[in-house]
Image 1: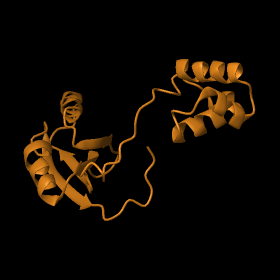
Image 2 (image 1 turned 180 degrees about the vertical axis):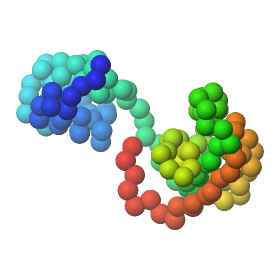
Image 3 (image 1 turned 90 degrees about the vertical axis):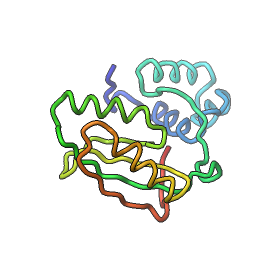
Length: 153
């Protein structure tokens, strides 16, 4: 169900903004912060979930503390961009846990990957054994991030 942003009032938008930062907030505290009572706040949350605006709740892990401080962005050009090739590439990317994000691009390359590893040696291994082995990969270009200035989870 697609929801028009105009259908969301200030309470809905406040709920979404607060939950993005603290998905574990108690309903009573959320209600207090948006200025409604608990029951209407919970009803709104349920409606937002059913509408697909809230797709789930999860723990956000600190990759640095997990030893995954190396971030690289990889441009990928495919040798074939027919639908079957795109589907094969997309399915294969889903099986690679080191690839945090994969975006199909309207650009001079076909995909942009965000890859997180422990260090440059681990990245080099992933590039050679995983990324380059993905279906229809013709070439890659890597850009190493020096610092994350802003990341939204």
